[in-house]
View 1 (cartoon, helix red, strand yellow):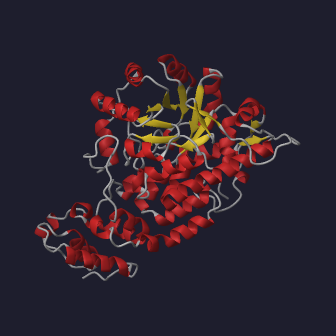
View 2 (tube, one colour):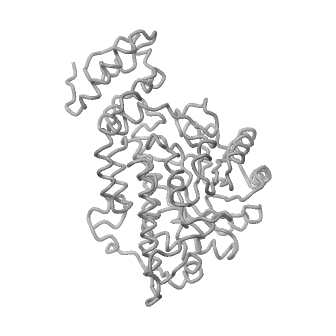
View 3 (cartoon, rainbow, N blue to C red):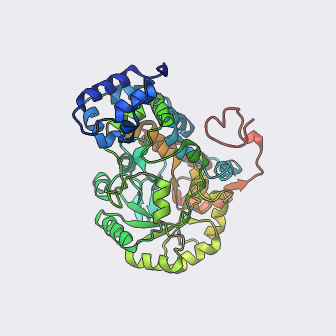
Length: 482
């Protein structure tokens, strides 16, 4: 038989043994015992037994494990790493060390060769900040502004992102608590793993609900009604997701939601006991905003079955009529599309390339921002996301035409690293960095930064000297490594 891998924590084998004793009377008893026999202990289950394998959640393993509070033990190293994190790059490494490889790569990846992913970050390095001196400012500065017409204390927020519970069991509730803690906007994805009602109870601040271009109009109406009842102030229609992007890390990892119980996935799960115990000791997650009966089996398959690639401007008009409130078109990269969106009735332009996860070699959003601001004029609200890793990046975006900035990877790294505590820390890091950048630049408020910004930010040609250490790639920064 196979030899037992040395890296298997003894605790997991004990838990598996306990599970075997507690589930012997189940008609279809097989899951953990078969997994252990075939993948850990090296014995071969019979074809009949193997055919009956079901996943641990269907077998009720989480109901057993929730009475064995080992989370604190498994999470102790993660919390220690989180406390030492200095910047978002550190949070990325914390997330990588805690999360299942499949989950981390889903979060960290871009499309195809990840050229747009690297360019999106590098574009900020090509922007210089030409600061004023003796501005008479002292910290902390006033970072307050308005998003979707609502007062917020920060000019940045966490973008709506799918399936947050795959990163940490707290999922969207962690991001909502962090938004409430910092007094900023919260964004909920229509592919969230936490329901609209639950989110509404966690944050009293402004909320935006993100919607994909679904085929089923009755589904759309139902979701919009729930969002209104849940106190969501604005709607964001994602329009750059009519095809599912080619994310090759996901393909190589055989990515699925929830994970498949292959030998490969189990080995990776054993390497990350904190993530694995969280996953096994909590309820299975579903697409809670659509239908809790819809299992979160495969994100790509589900999206491909529900997305309407033929969705056009007339459909967008119908959607705006159904919503009848503040609305953003999310995925704008061209001035002519921005003009048409304004004419169609959208109140906010959301400049985005879906985190460089869709069309490879799509432009860096910070590069197209000034042309979109020029096209729509000074009075149309603009949100920007993409490539943001620092408070200085947020400062540059506000200076070049954005009214607010969405961040995705930074807060998800925090979530994967440590739940609510990790998301709050991500916001803390960006807030301190933004405050410092604005103060050194000589702008005391967000409004002043937006008014004087174009004269403070200048573009230069990129150079490998912009990335001065050999560990930049390891930290997830991307190109320009020397």
